Amino acid sequence: MASYLCAVNLAEVFDVLGRRTGDVDLVERQVELLLHAGLDVVVADETLGRTAGQLRAEFYRRRSRDIALADCFALATTIRVGGPLVTSDRSLAEVARSKRANVVLIPDSAGRLD
Image (cartoon, rainbow, N blue to C red; front, side, top):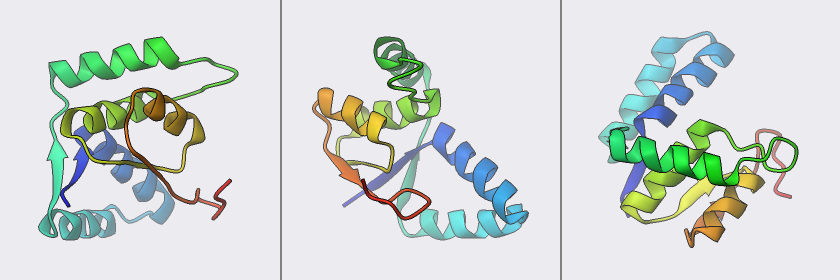
């Protein structure tokens, strides 16, 4: 099965893991392994940007469904390419399911799978 990652979410990988590890070169090496293994990066073009923005405008609720714009890019990518959305974010999973996307819930950073 093919695996996809939006370029916006790739930026998040470098941002978050680079800050957590303090080693952007390590992150680069790990990303290269994923790319070599077949991960495809989807360009955040105008159409994807419009879809992500529309999703956030439709579903974002500050107190009850605080979905990030980058998460909307992940969902827009899922909608474009098909396949499952893999996430630990319950709010994002709820929105994805409302759009008839297949969702695979994974444990969050603390290991919880609520």
